[in-house]
Structures are given as C-alpha cells and as structure tokens.
Image 1: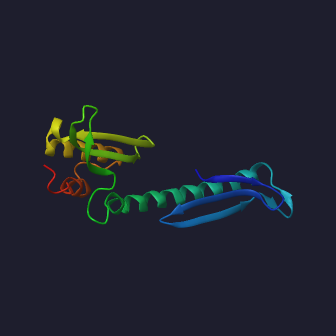
Image 2 (image 1 turned 90 degrees about the horizontal axis):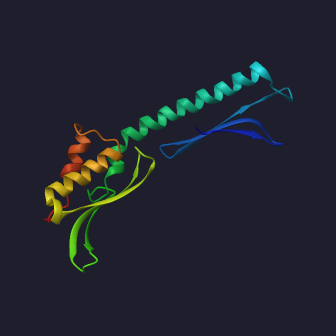
Image 3 (image 1 turned 45 degrees about the vertical axis):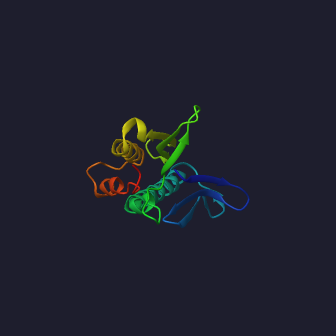
Length: 159
C-alpha cells in the first residue's frame, strides 16, 4: 500500500503515490473542508477514495509488470538476467563449472542465491534446475512461452 497520512501546516490528508512503468502517480485527498478538519463519515469517505485509487494503481502496476515480464528476464545479448555461467574454485583448488542464480524472489520477497554444478548434474540438468528455480521465484509457469524462451537461452558452448 502506498497511502500516507500527511498532517502538517501545509496539508492534512492522504497522499497516494505509486510508480507505474516508470511514471510516478501522486495524488492528494484532503481531509479539510472550508478550513475545518473532516470528522466521522466524511473522513471515512475520503479515506475510502484514497484506498480505491491506490487499489486501481496497484492493479495497473501488476498488469504492466506482467506484460513486461519477458523484457525484464533477458539481457540485451539474450542471456537470462540473474543466471550466470561461472568457473568456481573450490577449497581444494579444483575448478568447477556452475550455473549461478542470483535474483530477487517475487515469491518470498527476498534475494535468492544458489548454484548448480555441471559436474554434479550434467550440463542439461544443471541448466534445467537453474531455470526451474528462476521460474519458481519469478512466478513463471512451466507451460508458458516465456518458460520455453528461458530454457532455450542456455549459454552456447557450456558443456
């Protein structure tokens, strides 16, 4: 929710503020009428109007976020934003190829970091596990075109 009650010398009321597709929406709902503070039912009506506007902007935000999800998943070179191919040096000194995942989870509202070893799982299975984990945390269903695009974005020449 992005509603804030402002109570200062300049303004008394609610501010609704959200950014939708890079454009900031900011609207004010005054709790004063003719210089007097609103009370009771009148105050509740203004509060409800602010809540309704915030809900409307939230739905628009979600709709655009969902529509732009494919653009946010890929880098300009076609690789997946958040999955990297790395050579990890183990404590023993051995070098292991891995697919490393580092993303902001939409599912758990936290950063998720994990890796899948090509030596342990094989190239195809390590890639599938990385993409499945990515899709789970980015809330991408497996039967979608976007999931198939993610699977097809495996870095070439990686065993």
